[in-house]
Image (cartoon, rainbow, N blue to C red; front, side, top):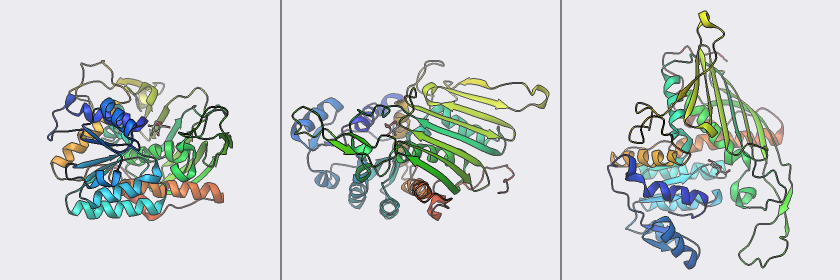
Amino acid sequence: MLGTAFMGRVHARAWREANHVTRLPLEVVCELIVSRSTNHGSEAARQLGFRRFSEDWKAAVADPGIDLVDICLPGDLHAEVAIAALEHGKHVLCEKPLANSLDEAAAMERAATTAAARGAFAMVGFNYRRVPALALARRLIREGRVGAIRQIRATYLQDWLVDAAVPVTWRLQAKRAGTGALGDLGSHLIDLVCWLSGQSVARVSSSAKTYVRQRPGARSLGHRGGPLPIEAVDVDDAVVAILVLQSGTLVTVEASRVAPGHKNDLSLEVTGDNGALRFNLERLNELEMLEFDPARAGTGFTRLLVTEPSDPYVHGWWPPGHVLGWEHAFNHEIADLVAALAENRQPEPSFSSGLGTQAVLAALDTSSQEMRWVAPDPRASLLDPVASLPNHPTQQQ
Ligand code: SOE
């Protein structure tokens, strides 16, 4: 594993507990963690439960004792590490978004396609696909319970950057993260919208804004106290967008890291011609559902508590009502990944799917900068190859 910060810690926990819920078809051994310094590396290995540590990522991804490389690094490092690992025949799990640019993502996808032909597979970590309530939402949509989808409202709001005194981290530097709220949070929304609806994005219109243009600089290792130097912020704090999907579904998307009161608030509402579904990540065990009944037109949403053994991913956890948390989606992600590898098949979302998201992100960026509607690169259709939902009349654009 590469990366020992927030996402590294989250993934390490999930790998360590990989066998806790479902007996996996392969044994997981947390073998080697890569860190930039010996002190930090030995501490990270001890704390996160890895057998060895290394300062040399190139040797790590070539190590014959390693089967899979998990990349929990800033976006600017994804392409080089993932491509090297795939060329050494390792399976790869890479954090989202796949890369910082369409070109990098395309190179990663090519490397993944070549590696897959030799039995090494790559997956991108859009973890929210594995929240039980969202997986149930997808199942209900596929079963036709909301009818043909007309509109989707998708927002992902956080507030950790409201305060202008919060210092710069790599997530606020374009050279490291590509974009701000757009790539960090908007990428989740794009992935979910296409995965839930089974449609790809036909055109987008978007506007992004940076409200806090200067912040205290990134804390460097050599900093000896006193005020931090001021650094310019070159990524967006917030973005709003309209997406029109292939079959005419209208989608509004909003991502912000400067939304006071919203901690980690990913909300989705899917409206069809026969009903609707509503989800909020801060109440992630619940899904709200409405099935339209002309005889009871005043009826509102019904709250489903998604903790039944028959609900996706729930079997193997606790008795009904013993709710799961944010981190458990990573257990499900790893269980699905290991199951696919054991059967020598492609895990989802693949790097092709990640490239599709990247194409939409690039279109949103261009639209915002050039103040016009943009049709994404055709590779956006890789995001969900299911062109339309079964048993549904396709809406006309
Ligand atoms: C930080 O904004 C962050 O950790 C994202 O990078 C994750 O993808 C999201 O799941 C939670 O917030």
